[in-house]
Image (cartoon, rainbow, N blue to C red; front, side):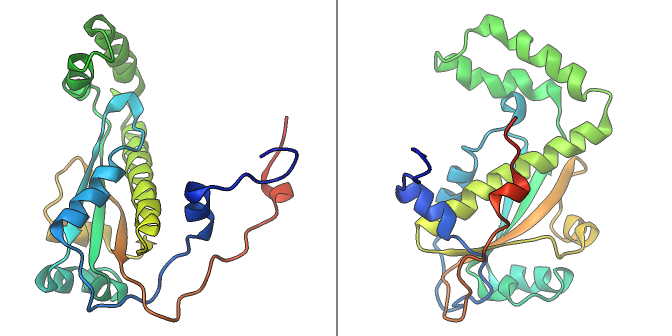
Length: 211
């Protein structure tokens, strides 16, 4: 902003015009390549210590949707949207830091001698703290999902993040690992008519303190 005047661009317009989609056109699919691109974009989001502790299950076939819908409060978007991602966060594990940083070192971004400087504090932060491990899984999955939401909007697609599902049933039905948390469901697809625009937000004075 400059002197109170918002400087707009395509990215900002995408963010501020996004709204949650209720109605999808079930006749319009997404290709597997389009699904892969959405996840690729999602995985550019930040993660603690470059852990990249996430996994995305793309529920896109009628058979898979039929398995998911009953354990997701029978919400129509599960079957109407082109794809519903089960966004999984993985419990933060400092032991994978060297492996995850190896491509960073190989690319010449980070010197190898700095890897222990990341692994050791990660071990101290998460090693003996299960709640922190889980909190980080949720943060990571949320960051990735948010990137996918705005990527979808920029591509002219709607999206619906959902917490209305049975996490134990999703974990069981879709074979999540013991260290994986189903953070949210994220439907993405082509919208049909009837969706609301962006809803008004609380005034900044109620949510911002300048100190």
